[in-house]
Image (tube, rainbow over all chains, first blue to last red; front, side, top):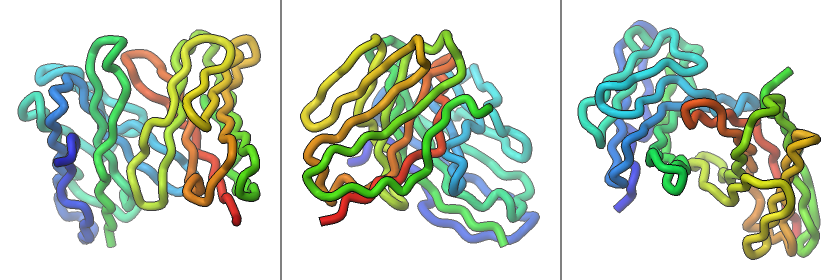
Length: 114
Length: 110
């Protein structure tokens, strides 16, 4: 089984709809991250969380919110989706120690906002 | 100036040749550097990490770091068509945040 899973894998929605993307991990990592990827722009950090009570904005948090329901679960919400939020979204996890702080990525969610 | 810069490519090399991928970064205090490989439509996977100046070898891959020049590179020896992918350079910033370059697309042709 995959260590980091994301649901759904693909989603098509309309402008103004609320969307939630979910991420779960079985790696036992404390730290979780949400990125979006656009062609030619690489990966950009949306939000990150170092534990259940610690959530921080990343580079491009406007229009997004997150919830860390448990150590293993980190959800990303688009409260009112807009077309320029069409992108590939990745969740990642890492440990807290220098020996475990490599980030591992989930399979991604392809989101299309019409 | 972007924090992490890569040539977008495509970099085209013949099978069996050495592919050389380059990355520059702007934050002089950066200490940790990573190369990820990403196949089209898939998630990034870690290939190499490097923390000290010099070379680090792992199989056909060699990462090179020069902190004085703020430069990190990835060499792929004996390139194979299966190496065709986008290679992402990442630099660790504060709070373990990774700052990614836009990636270099590598095409290895038979």
